[in-house]
Length: 608
Image 1 (cartoon, rainbow, N blue to C red):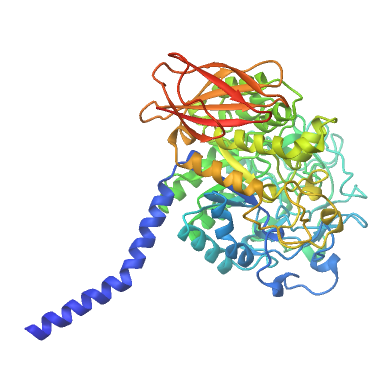
Image 2 (image 1 turned 180 degrees about the vertical axis):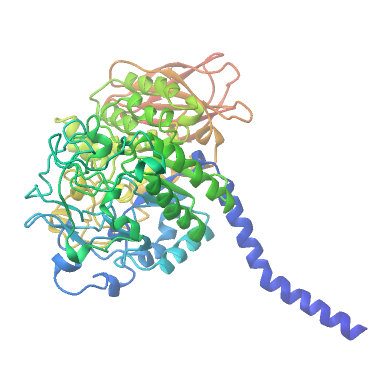
């Protein structure tokens, strides 16, 4: 009996030793997934431009020169060698910044190179997908992605995938267009589905009543894709797309390039990329299968949807509930879905429409980006921020829903924040760029929404424009136009690796991010505008802890002169703890506090 008891105790110890780590890992993942979308600080990156962990995949398994492999680390429009293995080795850097979620540009297999002669570029960014079921070989393998997701989760980080439904790579060629980039949109009125090549053409697709009837029976009558243009597919690319059904041109609109207005906004090609016929029920079910599988297999935590406004609302009304259901079944209760609804205007109605009509759970807050550029540059008064936030009621779910809008200062398309500041305020002194940039980040990290940091912003990247000009390498770059640009807050250039945790912007972002994630008032608290004016100067906001109503007073000075004035607060807010900047220790009188901020200063004041 003694021998048996001893053996059993050893067995129990062995079981505990082997299952303990697994239990701890499961508990850690559960705590990660319990966080609400508004609890996050997002870090966005392009894997190709982040870190190279495996040089053997730089050419994606292809041989030949850059126009075949897509690899040319000296050219800003080609692959540079970053991959998932490299990204995985840098997770501590990202976590050290205070980020809690990593959002990657699309990782799916892309057409390596496309574009007319002399205008070629590579699919390093991920938006020219040919195979929706596997990782692009330039970035690694599906196993590498699984390893990355597991490693991120183990460190308490969520992972958001960037997905594309609107289009695929440019494979379908329209015979009447000599250059696919110069292929005018042909409308349904002038080129109906039931005639080949125009209203006087031969009858085709008899009985098809148009895309408004999304029944399978109706779409079964759509058999000929040559209603607007004559469709041609190069023989070498006839079966390039995966899943295989995507190779059939009947599943594309084939009407030429979008003007991004009217009907063409959802039916035209985005710069010649094959525009998917998302009204077709076969496409809807196919896309649900594609992206549901990524949730099932990898347990990712959210989707950012590229070009969401260029897809018909009815598609999202079916796709989004299916993805949320798939995530819940996988044990992911707070799966975050947000769409790209791009606009350069401070126009919240433009973005809110897609939450009301399309029923997207959330959208990227492009209007806030414009407001921050205007206000922080000094091109507009601080009341532009107040105007922006008054419109939160427009979003489906109102102010509560606005807490989940991912907010950002700049991005890989429009350009980086310091560059935008200079663009919108032509006479801005270079010496003011860094303090204004820090002020912008302070506003981003403390105001409502989910702050999103674009990789490199924390290292002072500026850039000269948008798109390729804003996609600098984090690892040592070989692109001359990147390396010649001065950075903010450092004498270094992108010719050296840019992972310096001592950079002043990295340090300030990390401090503010941790203040944010440790105070519910800054993640889940509603806002009350305390002061705004029609000129640069003070912007004051209170946010409230939803559990106890405790006030957090946020103060920002957008002018190049100090400001001193009184600001109203709750009468119960009698003293203040300084979390950032400089706060008054006590209220001047019940319901009022004295504010004293330096030029471009900010303060985070926690009331007691």
